[in-house]
Length: 210
Image 1 (cartoon, rainbow, N blue to C red):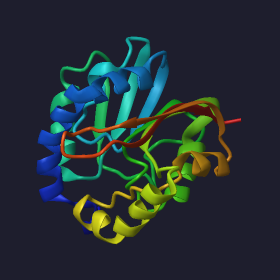
Image 2 (image 1 turned 30 degrees about the vertical axis):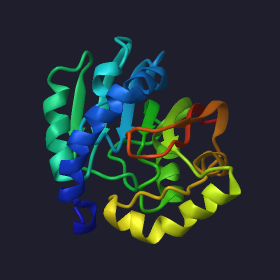
Image 3 (image 1 turned 90 degrees about the horizontal axis):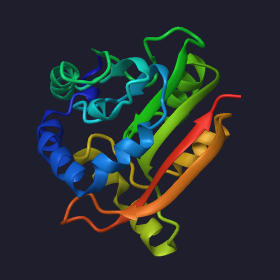
């Protein structure tokens, strides 16, 4: 694993922040994101495993990929009490440890903002999905408000350093479409995961591999 995928200070803070964010509404978003999933699932950037408890029982198994050591250890612990079988492994979005066209669904929750190469990550997701397989995504994205979008562009150099590579200005849905996915549904909404953060644009959606 490359050293630039380790962010111990951010990871320790995220363990606390994710609990607060879930209580403010992220947990409900996770439930919506994962509703109706079946079969074999790959979760990209599983973090500390906050999605695991929300998988429906129809899911046969989850292969959860997380490159950050501290978060992966927390995810491994969370997997023990998950309602479905979850295997947590080291890995990253540019090289998913799954064979071609073997996966029923890929889940990306609050991670596509921080992958180093979004186009490469989406190509990998496309590779592992079977034809008709789903990409479920839940992400914060660039604001449509010109002033807010400009501000997000402006803070990228600093924000990526302090927030483990997070880009607040990515047009993620457009990138998903450009990667060849068909977006079946996408809800856009403002949301603040913390009382000290202003509401930012978020999306929850579903796309499929043609």
